[in-house]
Image 1 (cartoon, rainbow, N blue to C red):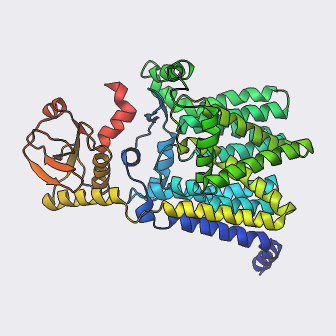
Image 2 (cartoon, rainbow, N blue to C red; image 1 turned 90 degrees about the vertical axis):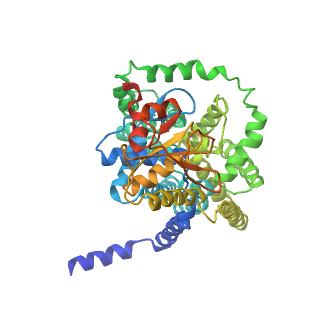
Image 3 (cartoon, helix red, strand yellow; image 1 turned 180 degrees about the vertical axis):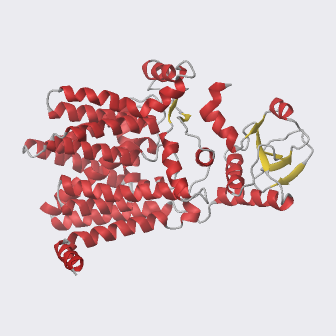
Length: 496
């Protein structure tokens, strides 16, 4: 009876005016992120490779120390991305799709955490506004389907912001250390995470003069890179040298004018288009939102209403924005994942002001942004997961023709990259992969092999390579894409 009485008291204390709408927002966010999952999850080269390596590492009790080679230069980041996926795979080991589900759950958690943070930063009304914006964000929805190592960056960026503001407010050293740890962890997933070092620097500068406790930030920044250093110690630290050389010298070999990186294009075209993909859907809304945030920030600064917390957020946002402008790489919308929580919070900041000052205008603005985001989301929906259907069909052809055999899958001159590794993933999931199994090649090019098994409508051909030994296959540029081979290429390539 005491327990029931205690629970009744607790329920009465719950703020139903906040808990109920926030709960509905989270439920909606979860529903829209899982809606039509079977057709929305993305399967291509990187996704198949990540999923293959993760399953192989988990089932063979291996710990990946390195990530994939980056597109920026000849170096690898940490293996933490695989560790993250291995957790999701271990929770439900019977299907490789559990890795995609695990990633979507992270993006639902993002909605919960950003609402909590918004409530602590301002109030409950601001939390609900931010929750609605996040729940409808097309970029947040779609990135949850995209099994890439940059996908956890928005969540890590949000966590870094949470601990930054907590440290600004409470001066708790633990918050600072957690901030430093996350700022070291984010680039271990993907190099764009290095931008969070600017958030750490802004936090330390605005908090005051450095103290001795700040020195502990250095080992915490380096801690997530320990797996890389361990692997690198077996390879004369070539990876570390290549990374340092790239950031100090290599990236400057590509001039910014070659990349078309003018401020007018960057701020006038790329940022508004990317902003609209995150919030609002239509670029015109991004232009208006950006202008509104600029005017509101100037207004609050002149009125001395700009708090230190918002100053940290705004200054680090501008610094990261500037850093990306001077990055010597082609920019895509996914390169702004670090800025997702910034853009969502700043947009909510503007809507919150409008609702408090001009209620009707603020509500209409929120509705228009929501409609724009939903329209952008609906335009990106696909009716069928064509890659998954194609790979499933290729697997069926092999299993029907050779019902009691396992396979070793080869790709000819990387002509079928994406499909070949995805086929290997499907077969591995069904226990049909063996390095000593029947040798099957997949290609879109003409080969001298005479044993054609099947060619689908897209021109992908399955070939029987049983008559060829390994040395012959290697000389003819057939590349093994079995899980063990994928793992070796990423984790153990330097051991040859």
